[in-house]
Image 1 (cartoon, rainbow over the protein chains, first blue to last red):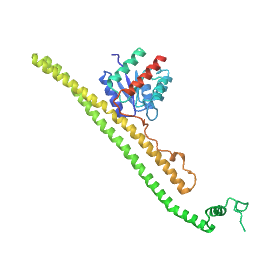
Image 2: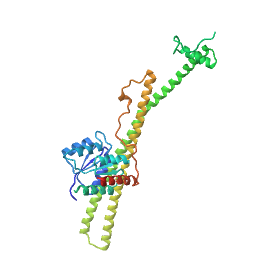
Image 3: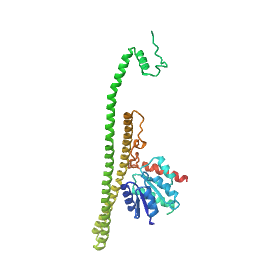
Image 4: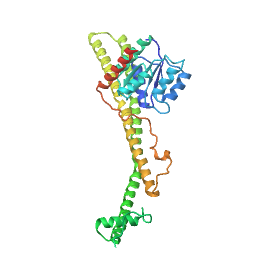
Length: 127
Length: 218
C-alpha cells in the first residue's frame, strides 16, 4: 500500500479519534488532524497531506467551504477529499458533489465502508 | 333631541365618540359603558402583570436549561474519549500479545495440541480486537447525539430571545429597540438537527446512488 498521509478534519474530538483509529486499522498510519476548516487550511500549508477526510458542520470554516478552498487552490486542487457527515439529505449530497468532493459517507460509518470509499477514490484519481 | 353619534370634526376619533357608539349599540347609558370599560382595563392589568412575571420566570430558567444540555454533551464527550483511550491501550496490548505468541511458536515444541492452542489464542485475540473496534465505532453515537442536543439548545435560545423581546415590549410598550444581536439566539456549536444514529444502510445507500449518478454524469 502506497504511503498516504491523511488529514482528518472534524470539530468533534471523539469523531477524529474514531476516524484515526479506523484508518490505522486499515493500515494507514500517517494521519494528522484539524478541528475545523481554518485549522485544516493551516495544516495543509504547513504539513501537507495526500488525502483529506472532512466533516461538514464545523465552526470557523465548515467542511464545504474547506472543499471549495481546496479546489480553488492550485497547490491542492486535485487533493482527494472524502466527506463524512451526519447530513444525508439528497440536496446536501448534491451540494457536496457540486463542490467537488470525491465521495460521501453518512455517519455513522463502518471501517469497511471507509475502506471501500478510500479505495474507490484512489482508483478514480489513479493513485 | 336626538344626538348625532357619527364622528364629527369635533369628536372624530376620540374615545368619547367610540364609547357613545358602543353604549348605543349595547343599549346602556354612556357613563355605564365607560365605567365597564375602565373596569375591564383595570382587570387586565394584573393579568398582564402575571403574564409578564411568567415570561420573566421562564426566560430566567432558559439559560440554565441550555447550560445543562451543553454540560451533558461535554460530559459524554469526556467519557467517550476516556473509553477510546482504554480501547486504544487494549488494542496495543492485543497486538503485542499476538507478537509474543509468534515468538512462543518458535520456542516451544510443536505438537498438534500446542499448535491448536496457539491458533485458538491468536483467534481470540483477533476477535477481541475486532470487538474493541466495534465498541469504538458505536461511540459515534456521542457525536451524533451532541449535534441533536446542540439543535435543541438552539431552539431553546431562540425562544429565550423571543421572550426577551416580548418582555421589552411589555415594559416599553413600543417596538423593541434592543439591538438585533441581543435578540438573536446565542451562537452555538454548528449542528445538524436531523442527525440520527441508525445502523440501517438506507441513508448511505441513498447517498451512494446520488454520488454514482453524479459521477456517471461527469
